[in-house]
Amino acid sequence: MSLTTRPPVATLIAENAPFTPEQREWLNGFFAGLLSLDGGITALSPAEAAALIPGALDGSLAPKSPLGDGDDGAAPWHDQTLPLGERMKLADGRPLRRRMMAAMGQQDCGQCGYNCQDYSDAIFLKKEERLNLCVPGGKETARMLKQLYEELDRAPPAAPASVPAAPAESAPAGPGRSRNHPIETTFLSRARLNKQGSQKETWHIEFDLRGTGLDYCVGDSFGLFPTNDPELVDAVIRTIDAPGDFPIGGRTLRDVLLDGVSLAPAPDMLFQLISYLTGGERRRKAQALAAGEDPDGDAQVLDVLAAMEKFSGVRPDPEAFIEALDPLQPRLYSIASSPRTNPGRVALTVDAVRYAVGRRTRLGVASTFLAGRLAPRAKVKTYVQKAQGFGLPADPSTPIIMIGPGTGIAPFRAFLHERMATKAPGRNWLFFGHQHNKYDFFYEDELAGMKAAGVLTRLTLAWSRDSEQKIYVQHRMREVGRDLWAWVADGAHVYVCGDAKHMAKDVECALVDVVATCGARSTDQAIAFVADLKKAGRYQADVY
Ligand SMILES: Cc1cc2nc3c(=O)[nH]c(=O)nc-3n(C[C@H](O)[C@H](O)[C@H](O)COP(=O)(O)OP(=O)(O)OC[C@H]3O[C@@H](n4cnc5c(N)ncnc54)[C@H](O)[C@@H]3O)c2cc1C
Ligand SMILES: NC(=O)c1ccc[n+]([C@@H]2O[C@H](COP(=O)([O-])OP(=O)(O)OC[C@H]3O[C@@H](n4cnc5c(N)ncnc54)[C@H](OP(=O)(O)O)[C@@H]3O)[C@@H](O)[C@H]2O)c1
Image (cartoon, rainbow, N blue to C red; front, side, top):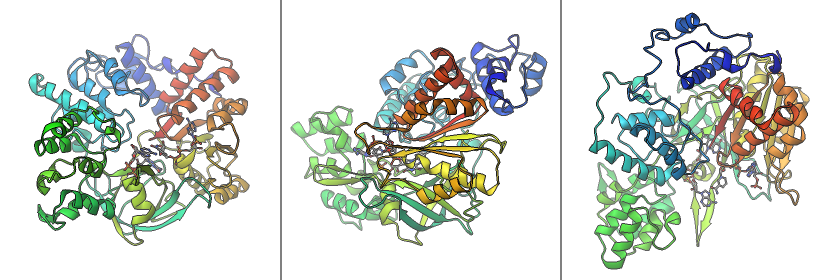
């Protein structure tokens, strides 16, 4: 069925069904996604809506927010490219739990174990005490949440008669199904994906799942608990001048520093602790840093070691020192394999984060753990994070367009393997890009094989550093706009994976341009069209 003959999403819920415009919009999106729009469905009558949604007609559903504060559920701040200040402005005047949501990094990345809304609701309901779980939001989010939490204590809300439990509690996940219940799996291998001469260091990583009972679907992510670099741990121990075997809660200081706490960036609590142990100008600076100020212009680069070196000579009690640090969080990686072609194994595509600050090379904890420190056959605490709205279309004949530069290729390798194994008849188009064709063409032979076999219908490549002008995937999308539009008009699902801050937004803009130019629509209509694709589950993102 061509897109042009589909019923507009806005007609699924009848105008006279008892919903506010926002609820109608949400429900339209929800049902469009649920029903995939493939059957040419027209508007739901009030009676049909009532049959599908208990409470639709008696009005008990319509006006209430899940937490009984009358909030309409709209979240205009839910955009990871907006800075915190702007997000908070958009949430101004909204109930506290909604402002807490606006403080999150807004990626729904799942790293905290929730989506942004559920995490903020859980904090508001005091079912979640940890205010520092938002990885994309970092210290900025943690600080804002702390401030909002103090507001919560000052003016406790009238408790709603019944409040929904946070998802983490309401649906306790089995072993290996959430960050709260990781299981040990075995690290198998790493293989460098870039060729000699590349400026990047990206690895194909495999874990063995056999005997664990753990399984996954393509589109899911793999979570793992890394350990810190032992050299960094030893350097930290030296700066605080404590014995590595100092006992802390039945373990040694060194062990806790290895796998219990984050060593970057230095949290406000650490500066607070330092301020108690020093005096004069140094104390004033530590207090300023603890308050989120930047007295010397170096706050951005102060990891735990750099902070202790800055305040050299401060000797905190090891236990108080550990207390002042944030817990070491797990990291998520998009799964790059299909259980059908790689049974009992899971593959990842991991970019090793290493960068220099002064004379020291800073290491991304999890990526360099995978890229180097982890020995083959070592056991790692891991879990599968189920994808929320990111997966292959239910109908195997639906065409798919996958846009994944850099490590963004990971879930698309999984999709292609799955479609190959299931002999799905749908066409598959991959946009891949990276710095250099010669060095950074990940899975080149494999993709060539899939192309020859007819699984990969089309492969479009963008190399950003092979010419004077940067060529990105979105440039290629515009170049082949007519074909891209034809696929979309044929019902293709569009996927994007990789960098959230810039690439994902730019790709969306390119898609809007293609829809406007090749689909003969105004810009506003094209924006609405892409928004409808999202609501219908036909534009899905896995970005970080
Ligand atoms: C759902 C999801 C899927 C993901 N899939 C993948 C994937 O398939 N492959 C993949 O590689 N990653 C993926 N990630 C990202 C991954 O989870 C980690 O965030 C990433 O590997 C970095 O983690 P790390 O522990 O190595 O680095 P960290 O210790 O967390 O350090 C990273 C931080 O270092 C800083 N930094 C990094 N580079 C620089 C620089 N040049 N200059 C200054 N500061 C810098 C930044 O503050 C950055 O946030 C995914 C994330 C999510 C949420
Ligand atoms: N400084 C950092 O914090 C840092 C450094 C590296 C990676 N990362 C993050 O780590 C993740 C993985 O990175 P990766 O190895 O997959 O690759 P990546 O660094 O995201 O780069 C992949 C390709 O995308 C290009 N690119 C850069 N900006 C783009 C844009 N706005 N639109 C489209 N393409 C763009 C890059 O080109 P050019 O690089 O030539 O511009 C490169 O060719 C990403 O989330 C990335 O943001 C962070």
